[in-house]
Length: 332
Ligand SMILES: Cc1cc2nc3c(=O)[nH]c(=O)nc-3n(C[C@H](O)[C@H](O)[C@H](O)COP(=O)(O)O)c2cc1C
Image 1 (cartoon, helix red, strand yellow):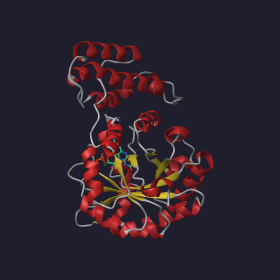
Image 2: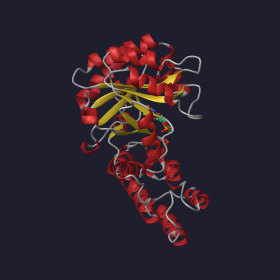
Image 3: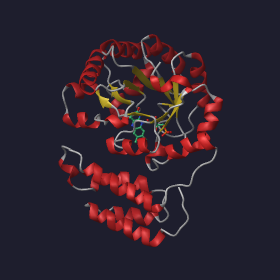
């Protein structure tokens, strides 16, 4: 049993999110109470080719453990080889296999959720990875199926359990749903009650009350939070507090939010990125937009964020916003 499920612990995972859950963002979530984290997915073949950008993507700190690295691909042998490289170089606490990504570029290479159309191949890939890294636990992340007529979560769950997976995350949507519509929690509950390995439920968890409700409804051993953390890493602190004390604490003040955004930016800029585009802050705008989306006056902020290049510009936007709004009520 993976240690973070022992003694009836109920871990909260930060969902892997490409271009969002970078090493610095993960650290903020960890500080706010995320128990287990997974890097965004990286292509097995590209890791084997030694693409330095990908090795930066899967980097993590000791403080972030237990930490998983997520890989995707279509070829069992190269998935095994990439897992072995990861085990040797990084010693992650687990290696997670992505069978859920719905993006065209991933489907085209018959990876991610494309493989849900071929459960036997999911099994071969899981077995190849598990055999390649006997010292590292292997876990799997899936969607419920390709579409509503092809729900395979239970079948795939049984196969990966047989082939050596030590936990299964289910995003309760089909490939065809993409990221819209409701997650189907009854499918997740059904699989969780059937399998012997821990099942982590994922999809549409937006607040502490959702966690309590879903925990009561399903036999999930843990839950994974994605987009709700994207602009609000404090969600982990709220959930933990609610689980312990039965009420949601005050949200962070506007000052704390801006401090976090600026600190985030500083730490990101101090990272040894190898990409020229990262010399200014333009590439970070989507992150800033997410982190300021729920603030009062976010439309105006968004306009100002369009013009920022350097950290001083960001500090000016923060100052201006705080001058106008810091007396308002706390809000999420
Ligand atoms: C921007 C973005 C990037 C994502 N990247 C990954 C990824 O790299 N690996 C993965 O398994 N899932 C990825 N996902 C899916 C999330 O991990 C999660 O399963 C999904 O967002 C549903 O959870 P939520 O409703 O809490 O957001 C991504 C989702 C988003 C929104």
